[in-house]
Image: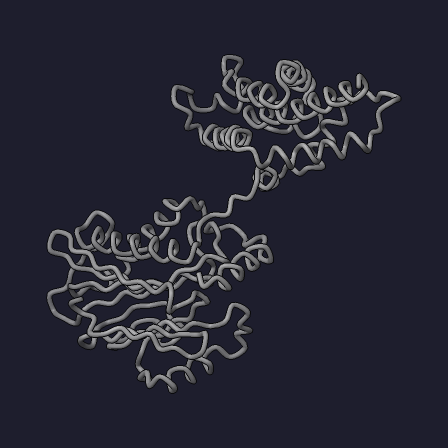
Length: 383
């Protein structure tokens, strides 16, 4: 690597620090904790901290680590909870005469869509700790090294392909999140007079850097097993604001009590069947398909449908009903289809608040489950 003389992983028990030694003093523009901002250095490092790090005095902890590993005071330093000795990666790319290097650590316990609040922290932390115990933390640190000197404007400009490449890497792996709440980056470039003014996503330098970053981020996340945990359709629906209670309330609204049937037993059967169906790949596919189509429709991105039409649930849109009927039929056969139509007619409870694909999908799911329960109860009476 042209501008990297050496990379060392300094271990300290279960913790480790990646130290990058450049071949010469270079300009560094970064959001790093140590020597962040604009500086000149020939050493950068990424220091691992425990997942439950209190961060009461991070600068003091960093100084101790620097002293222990004899890292010079002018070094640019980052922190991460990612397992440095397992998920530190470097990727070098040459494109149309432009050479770039991306040095990356990546973990996603605190991933979030930019502009949205970080939710479900306890659940995310639990998942991250399980991966940590398997030696597979959170923060994406990116050090991008340019082979050509950059103007200040170009240093800012090249952040665009770096950040977009990071988000593209997450998207390729199935995440809708764009990064984590603690991401940091550094732009490293040689000192020189003949400086490049442009480094955006359409330039050779920007393309080279984006490819390096994207490959390094994907490599790290795959290595640590940081792939999306989809859970079950119950989790997917809960993420859309639809709980098991909501589904039961909608089902119960159309239930006509029979003297010989116990309502609590029917509720128990309903919850049990939902959980069994949540392990079925076909039901999962149909439900997730409806959720995805609802999202596409809300963006007015369904092919052949004029903008603004989806929100009106046009009468000639029948794909939503087809999905609902298929779900009901899959669960309960022909009887399930009749129950689907009954729910679709009345739209009880939360169903009435949903869009075209979501409401018919729930009509099929709830109607199919209830029809299946009725069939079971009738069969039990005949025995």
